[in-house]
Length: 201
Image (cartoon, rainbow, N blue to C red; front, side, top):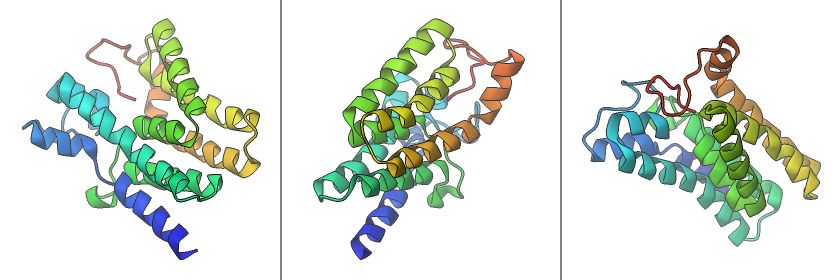
């Protein structure tokens, strides 16, 4: 039990390391929380620091989801605990203790969690995101649709109801963090991919 709790805490602390802020400092760019959309995520880093910085941010955020889940699997922990470690890392990204609980929207970290938990979930997410993004040109809508599919797929793959419930929590949190994007989509004011005014996901 002590090891399980320690793993969850460590996952949260890892998730609290803000890739966007660290990368922007390395590149001599402004703190992404103070410019552009104010979101410390890949799209805003792309806007303020360029493509390489954005790629490093994406990989860093995804790694925060991969490492705790993969570690739990490697240590022989239950799938439920692995999912909870992923959720802890995700919460760290959203509400980082090192940055006054002001984090990103969590999509890249969620992708990392799904890939490490079951690669089929990760592939499903990426394929769904790409399909919706190509058709609609809305990054936020693509992220929301892809996220919403995951809990049902965990159930379809035969995972316990408790695990599907954990992924429902992910969905709720991502939708909450994208509430402004959802409002923009409903009002027809959400920027499309490639537009400088696009609100990042």
